[in-house]
Amino acid sequence: MTPDEWLADFETKTAELQRNAAAFRRNLESSGTTVTTEDKSVTVTVAPNGALLDLKIEGNTELATKILALTRSAREQAATNVLDEFRQVAGSHANELDTDVSVPTPPAPEQQKKAAQPEEDFSEKTVYRKESW
Image (cartoon, rainbow, N blue to C red; front, side, top):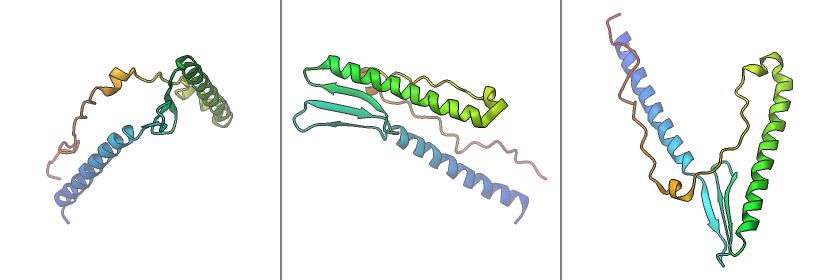
């Protein structure tokens, strides 16, 4: 196999991996779900990782709001606990890490409904120069 053939094969495999990774990311981002009870009294929305994003309790929005706030606070505290333990292991390198443990607020329902913009497909582009060796 010549260097040019090897490079062409490598670029083909790399492009396929990039396409697969982009598809995986899109599928993962849309893997969250919303479930409602049969009587429509409770609706729960979770992120792909299972984190509670939204809760609706028919006739009791105040309780749903309190539960969401407590869930957010608990998630932040859990993340802080994990980070503290990790700092013990990382030692002096801990300051080099991104240590933001805040939990992002889920987007408003009208923002969630907007169609996601497709990501640019770089699969046909290469970072390798095709010059003779």
